[in-house]
Image (cartoon, rainbow, N blue to C red):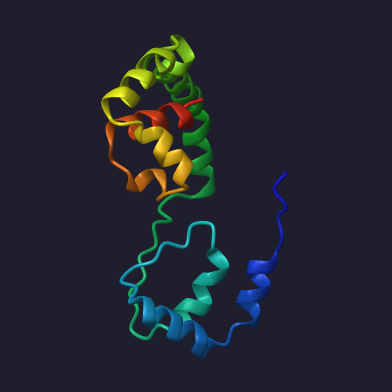
Length: 139
């Protein structure tokens, strides 16, 4: 299982403002989203003079909860229907048929990709690797 630690927060708390500012400057950051890393907002804001902040907090908790409870069943049903109809691994064993054909036509590109430990899936645009990624993600 995933061993969740707070080591990232320990690093953040031990980071000097000058070091954070230098790292942000080196990366030439134009914009940042703090979803999931809210504790980084204030230290970043403190070392970012003249930064413009766009807050997308446009609903109250009650409004959010009403929207979630109203639409969650519809969304869940639609996503499951989509998955059953469009994801071949849920409906028919297309991968058993198509993947060997794609491997033959594209010089074993999936095997080479998986064997090399090469770039992330999102950086590879060949048809077989994209098809393989689609099937792996939708299991």
